[in-house]
Image 1 (cartoon, rainbow, N blue to C red):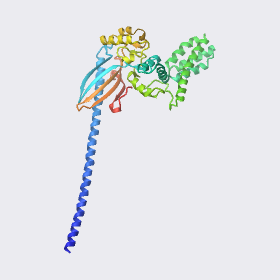
Image 2 (spheres, rainbow, N blue to C red; image 1 turned 180 degrees about the vertical axis):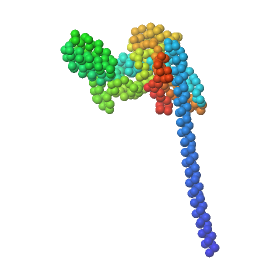
Image 3 (cartoon, helix red, strand yellow; image 1 turned 60 degrees about the vertical axis):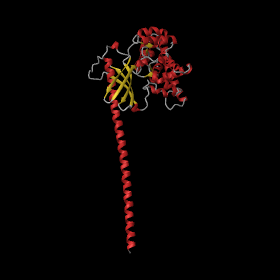
Image 4 (cartoon, helix red, strand yellow; image 1 turned 45 degrees about the horizontal axis):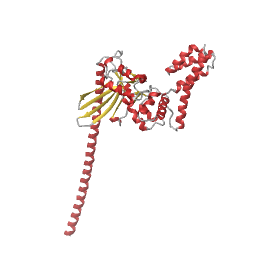
Amino acid sequence: MTSASESATRAEAGFVLVAVLWTLTALATLASVYSSYTVNTADASRVADDRVQAEASIGAALEMAVFRQFALPEKARLARGGFDLRVGRTGVAVRFRSESARIDLNAAPADLLAGLFVAVGVDSPRAETFAERIVGWRTKAKASADANAAGAGANGVAGGANAASANAGAVGSDADAVAGGANANAASASGNPAGADANLSGAGGTEDKAAKEDKLYSEENMPYPPRHAPFDNALELSLLPGIPLAVVERVLPLVTVFSGRAEVDVSTADPTVLSAFPEMTPQILGAVLNARVNDPGGGSALLALLGPAKSHATADRSKAFRSSIVVEFDNGRRVHAEVVFRLKDQGAKDQDAEPYELLYWRDDFDGPMQSA
C-alpha cells in the first residue's frame, strides 16, 4: 500500500510540474510578444516624430529662401543660390534655381521640345514625333471644336460671317487664343467673307489635329484619350504613347509645368537645355557657359552671345523657383525634398497672406523622389 501511495503522489507532482512549465512557456511567449509590440511602437513613434521634424525643417528652409529673395530689390534677386541652416536636431542644406531654367511642357514650342529630346540622345525623326505627342496632349480640343461649329453658320455670307465671329468671341472665355482670332476677324467678316472663310478653315485645321490625336490614341489601343488640356504634372509624359520610360526619366529633370514661359532663362539653364535651342552650336554653347562663369548676372550679354539661337531664351527674372532641400538628422538619417514656390507681388492688398504661393512639395516620406 505504501508503494502505491508514493507512486500516486509522484504522478500528481509530475502533472503539476508539466502544468507549471506550460504556464511559464505561455508567460514567456506573452512577454516576447509584448516586447516586440513595444519595440515596434517605439520605432513607429520615432518615424512619425522624424517626419514632423523633417516637415518643420523643410518649411523653415522654404521660408528662409523666400525671405532672402524679398530682402533684395526685385531686379537684384538671385536666379540661383544656396545656403545652410540649423533647425532643431537637423542640419538643412538648401539649393534653389529659377524655374524658368527648365523647359515648360505647356508653353514651349514644338521645335524646342524636339531639340530637348535630341539633346538627351533621341534621333531627330523620333524627337519630332515625341514633341508632337506633347503638343497633342495639351491642345484644347473643345475650343477648336466650338470655333469650327461657329464657322458652320458662316458660309461666306456677310451676315452669317458676322454671327459666326460673335459666337467664336463668346467661346473665347474658355480659350484666349480662339477669342483673339475670332474678335480680330469679326469686324472684317462683313466686308470680306473670303477672309472669314480662310480664318474658319484654320480653326477647322486645329480641330483636325485634335481629331487625329484622338485617332492615334485609339489606334495605339490606349485606355484613355489625350487630355486636351495643359499638363498638371511632368510625370504625365509617361502617359504619352510611343515615348519610352527611359527617355521620360532623362528629360524629367529638365522640364516643368510651373514656369509658364515659352522661353528659357539663359543665365541658369542646364547646358543640356541650352543645347536644345534650335540653331545652337557647340561654339555658341561653349561661349555662353564660359561667360556665365565669369559674369553670372550678365543676362543681356548672354543673349547677345546666343546670336541666332536666342529666339527661345530670356534674361527676365522669374518669380517661380525650385528648391532642393536635404535634411540631415543628428543620427545620420537624411530626408530629401523638392519644393516649387512662386513669389507674390509685394504690393498685394492682403498683407496677412503668405508672400509666396506653394506650387509643389514632395519628400522621401511620399516615396521615391521624382521631379514634377
